[in-house]
Image (cartoon, rainbow, N blue to C red):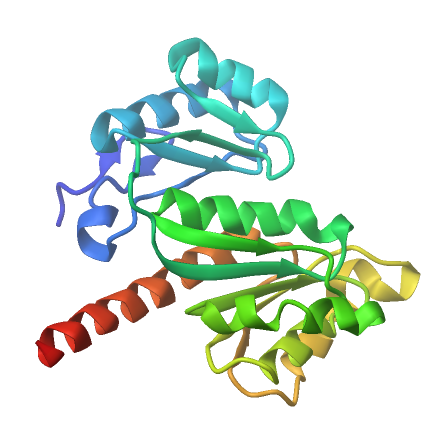
Length: 233
């Protein structure tokens, strides 16, 4: 255990995390020094053969690309990735949003889950102000092993989805909304106080956290399905 991290002086990279938890360390890029960012990305890539960075700017991507030319940047989710080819994405995670303004947070969740090997079904702009849009997607939601519901304003989407599906719902409040949204606090409180069952809530705008938890649930569902199939045979 003592040798499962790489000491860079300014950071101690958890190179043994994937062996312990099944998911390797991810880089939170926001406010990191340029030199630190280069060293962290290069060492994690050397250790794991792939690396994901979140909350990254275009300028940070250019810095990483100088040392790792294969790096890719998605400006909507603000993620940087260098990834091994994953031929078979497993399971099914539904990532949905109330509105189009919530898509950046939803994309952070979706791209995180895909990086970790999960299949993601994107279902955007199905907020409760036009609930017929949500109801038209019920079949897709029911096929998922877990649903990520991303919403700002009053955050009602998670409660409605929670009343429609039999799988866990991960609610992600966003800071999208007018003054009384209070930077996402209104949506957060709505989600925490939901009367629907099976809902868990992550922090405001925390798409990465939702994608991570959704991956864990999805993996358990896939593993359980494989065991059941083996038992049937």
